[in-house]
Image 1 (cartoon, helix red, strand yellow):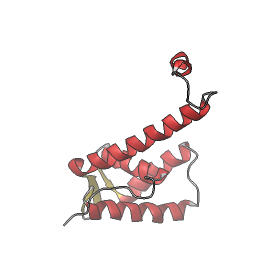
Image 2 (spheres, rainbow, N blue to C red):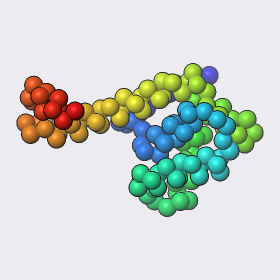
Image 3 (tube, rainbow, N blue to C red):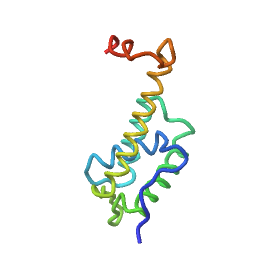
Image 4 (cartoon, helix red, strand yellow):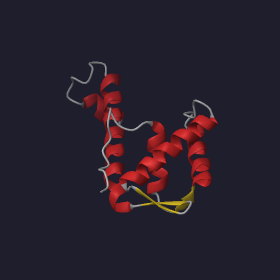
Length: 124
């Protein structure tokens, strides 16, 4: 029986977000190619902390978790997304991203977000 794709402890970290985004975009990946893409994305975001080998181990652990819960299918050495199972996980990642954006907007308003939203309308 497959476990549910539910995020715990406040949601995914940046590495999990990148993994979900790359795998959900489609295509088949061997681990080395998948790591190369994700490591490049993390370096572009200036989020590749902890050394390359540690990131490789963390990514492998997260990828194996996605295989266990059914979000990613593994055939030999090739990993590919399971779109039906990844949809809920992608939705959770998007919801967390939206919550973080809303927090940033609220904290950036002079009155802490207590206004009528006019400040937000003018910035758009």
